[in-house]
Each structure stands twice: as C-alpha cells, then as structure tokens.
Image 1 (tube, rainbow, N blue to C red):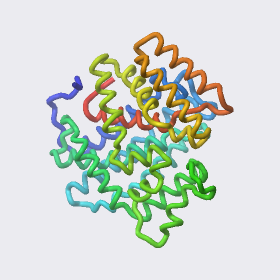
Image 2 (cartoon, helix red, strand yellow):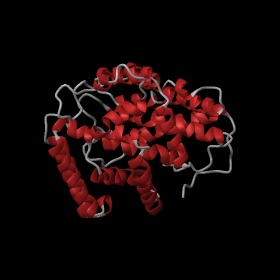
Image 3 (tube, rainbow, N blue to C red):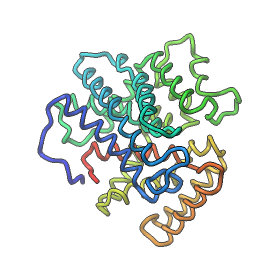
Image 4 (cartoon, rainbow, N blue to C red):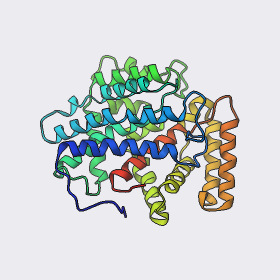
Length: 333
C-alpha cells in the first residue's frame, strides 16, 4: 500500500490543480532519472539532439497545461463548464509550443507524455471534485477513465485541428505505419472533413498504429490493467521506486510492440526488441545477474545498432503514465 497517504484532507480547487500538475512533473522526471532503461534517455544516456537539461526543462512545461486542464475538469464537475469547452486540443498544442521555448535541443521531450497525461488529468480532477476536493483518497480508475472518455467524445473539430497541427509540426506527417503511402496525421481530418469530429474518433482512427492512441481510445487499458498494477506489485516487494519503475518499463517492453520503434526502424526491429525484453523478464529482469546481463546487452544493441538510437518512446510514455497514476494514488519515491 502507499505509505504517504495522510489523514490530511484537501478542500480547495487550487490544491487539486497543484497536486495533479506536480504529480505529472514528478512522474516525468522520475522516469527520466531511472536506470537501467534500455535505449531510453537518462542523465547518463542523453540523446544526440536532446540533452539532460532539455528533458528537465520540458518537464517543467507540463505544469501549466495540466494545471489549467485540472481546473476545467473541476468546472465541468461543478456544472460551470460543458465537456466540449475543456479545450484539450488547445492545451496539448500550447504545452508543446511552450516547451520549445525552454529547450535548446531540437528534440521534443514531452509530446507523448502530454498526450497521455492530459485527458487523464481532466478525469482525475473531475473525480476529485466529486469527492469534495479530497486528494488523499484512492482513485477509482474505472470512474476516472469513464470521465476521461466522455471528455474525448465530447471534444470538438477545433480540438482535432489543434492536435493535427501539433503532430504535423512537431512529429512528422509520415510516421504512421500503414499500407497507404499517403496516410499520415492529416488523414483523419481529410477523410471526415464534413463531419463533426472529436478526439475519441481521432484516436480510434489511429489506434492500431500507435500505442498512445490505442490507450486514449481504450480507456488506458494497458496502463490501468498492466502497467500500474505491475508497478504496485514490484514496489510492495521492494519499496524501491526506481527499481519498480525500471522493472515496469522492462515488463511493458516485453508485453507490447513499441510503435515508436516500428515507425522509425520497422516492425521486425520492434518485434526483436519485444522478444529480447521477454527473455529479460523470464530471468526476472533487474533481480538476477542473468537478467542484468541481458538488460545490458539489449541496451548496447539499442544504442549502437542504427544511425539513431532505437528509443522505445511509446513504452516510456506508458511507463510515465503508470507512474503518474501511482503518484496520484499516494506512492512516493
């Protein structure tokens, strides 16, 4: 069980906003400092175009959009705002644009994390609002994800346009694996340009080609059912937050094919990484010498096999979200 849930009861909107936004920044930074994390960024393993300071600067830029989205989740719970007025797309775009002002490197450090955290933030804030603004209670994740889905379903064309602009500008137009060469992040709006669209349908359109969109379209199925429960299990065995984070990253890497890798290096490479992670988990990962040796071998392969580091970015975002939920639920480093 979490050791840090205290009898203190919060009762102010501002407390909830700060609690959620601060939890998000902490989750991002804990994931960043965690080692080992094969192929992923850390203080000892920065990327060529993105240094350690860039990741920390980017993390600080999570606070504002999630602080604002928390307020909107609360206002909807209090019937002061409609679901469709939450402006999810705007704050996604605003958050990444602001982060570019603080980061010297060319790489993007928070897009995937912000995509995962933002809808969940609204759901969590809405949940706390219905519980008297108390943040010292366990999250009902079934309720939270239902609320989150409602926000996605009642978003607007403008939200979809903002998300498309963000992806095209800061990711690439041609990163999604597809049998259609022309298929890219503009496809959804082009196909459904005469319809009333929402972010739920947007994520459903791309869910088979991107783990983040799969999570958003399916109530955070992997994170809620596998990532977070696994983290809790390891933490309750070890009481070590960093070890639990590392082992959760390895577990998720063994469980799902990383679409970030698949887009850049192909499905075969992504499948090989998953298979090697499975072998690591069969040897209990961090907790055996054989497991540690396999982790080291995989890390060497990911960092030295291609012109660019083979970075399991999608799994990193799922791990970060598992930590975000754990911290909201009272677990502390």
